[in-house]
Image 1 (cartoon, rainbow, N blue to C red):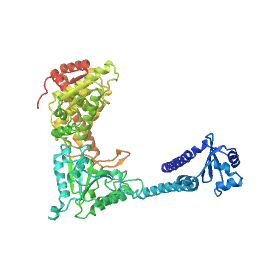
Image 2 (image 1 turned 45 degrees about the horizontal axis):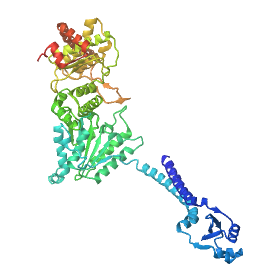
Image 3 (image 1 turned 120 degrees about the vertical axis):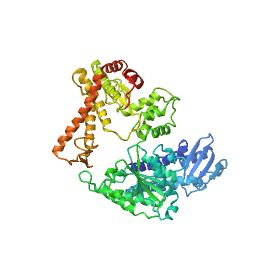
Length: 608
């Protein structure tokens, strides 16, 4: 409909332009007076005419007083015949300058042919645009099943390489082999080696899976076709499978190349998984992907790279040898990798001379590459809002807290009593975390509301750890329960401010029993098997592989772990009451305590 309206307006504008041309060509004649033949004869007889110009069927008359007139005659009759018919004396004509002017080409066409041809031209143009619009709609309908991939051909300006990917050293080493396959396939074929057909990139969100896939294409200098898993599936039956065929046909024409499918779990989920997991159109799309990957010739240099952060839900047929032969795990960056990532993302941002990215990397344990890029962007926004030309350390620290917890809510109005309760609550968290050797060091304590929290205690691990002991979990439970215990000790009752802490402590204690096998009474085994069955966005099924009697013991063990953490926290709070009051006094005065000031109040952190 929009195209039809646009075509109609185009034809209408052309019509207006042509009408304007006619108007401008005929506009010059409006000043010339048109008279009859009898008036002309009378003017000749009265010697009032000085000049006559004959042009086709028009006689242009110029009088002696310089006035101009126009007289129309029959096209087939000449001027001399006309004057003789009216018996004009030759002596009267001798004093008049008479000339004959040929009709110009433009005047002829505009006056005679265009009025006849123009309507047909306008109708023809209108029909042409109408038919073209219908043909475009038909072609779009016919191409509905074609792939909607994004074709990216790397060149020197937009080519991504492994140098652009900070960290992920092991992943880049694995993918370097794929680059060799694409650049020098002959040396592998001569030895009878088959090029791997698929590479599956596994990793948490934001770890750089898409960037790594592009860097492989950039290193090998081959075309790169990018399509998301969700773009295959439409509400129409067979569209997904058709798009898969179209995508692979395009890849075969451009071989050697890389075909990248992002979020493959959108179409690659386990088939026939039951409620909420079965989807005929999605399964047919997956079947077509499996067929196409099996249909590759051994010498075709096409490598399918797929990315997902949910490998546990993928269909086993996708993961078998011959389809996705390589699985590359991309971990969250460690301290050195985070520093390198921050350096890459800060290249186009003016940092102050005293900015230390190593400190920022130390404070961002567990952050992905996307999180680190977001921190630098938030820091740049904060610096711009404060009208600074450089990004300082305080901007970066503020950005970390904003990303982790949320923006400050300085305008939140609270009573003095609520402020004091919050100060005791956060002081309890900080005190217990400081005096427990297995807990992470305290970097900041604040009673300024941030996000959904009324206050917060920022703990940062001194080093990256991948293995955690039971004692560390008990200490973490003690830190989570510390705020609740301090409120109960000081005020004799508790508030709703500890709701989130209690929920996290309970979940951690349950994981100790059911996932980590750290219960002394239940033994080294796991309890419960979760199945991926999504309905309305929720996991609704958990298979219980234990009896009701064991379920009671699990509850008892969870309560036991919580009591152990509570006892640890209560002992420290009772022993360090004076330190607790000092922290509260400073918080009520300054609202925020940084690491150095905090350790000046309570002393250095005990070592293990």
